[in-house]
Image (cartoon, rainbow, N blue to C red):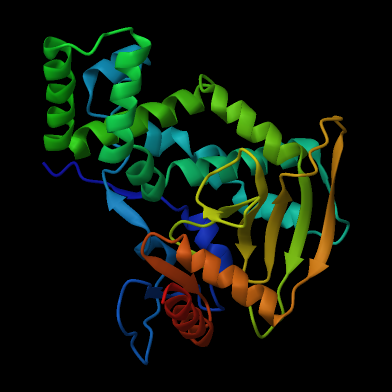
Length: 310
């Protein structure tokens, strides 16, 4: 019996807001040396998925969190915002520039989840380089001195992780997602407050030069103007594309912890140059593909990105 399921790491509800009239989008691979003259059309359901990506097959994790269904994350972990994504975007992109704080909280939670459920996050956070440092740090915190026996044990753990990296990284990542869902991750509340109470600006793109998105949408810019996937300490701003013509910009420098029942959203109109810079940054932070409803914009973004990298 085939127990394989298609798990979308980027919600179809998110991509559906970037489609053209027939419900499709185009994509380009930022790693390819050239791109086709005729870019194919894709429905959101055909993009950004990995079979069984959120499958929980570790019995210890199931027991720890009292979960029996191995597809619990896919069935219940993301539906709460996927089913409401379109309505939430419509509310924060409305003409009044004001949104109820409950809706603002939900959009922040949704964006945070979209970022941390992504393969880019799994590979960068739970890759061998980071895990090696985590293992070393754990040994130090446990007060285990550097003797031959301890060092052999430390290396054995690292070797085992290297051999079974996909297994371990999947389990650690899924455990993190489950704990976040159950409210057990302190970092969730820290990031949520930063994003919720930072200054919000809705950026508008010109009709003939829209924002692109990617298989890993959203990025941070630090105080030195360096790009990061998820760096919410001392960040200058966080950018997240909502539609081809509207994007959310959250400032990390003007955080107001005075809680209010509504959230004010400033409005700014971007010119072609502004959008071009944002699109290059979006491509830079992508795992593999950049997405748009306009093929010409993808070609420009791909070329600008290649020039930027060179």
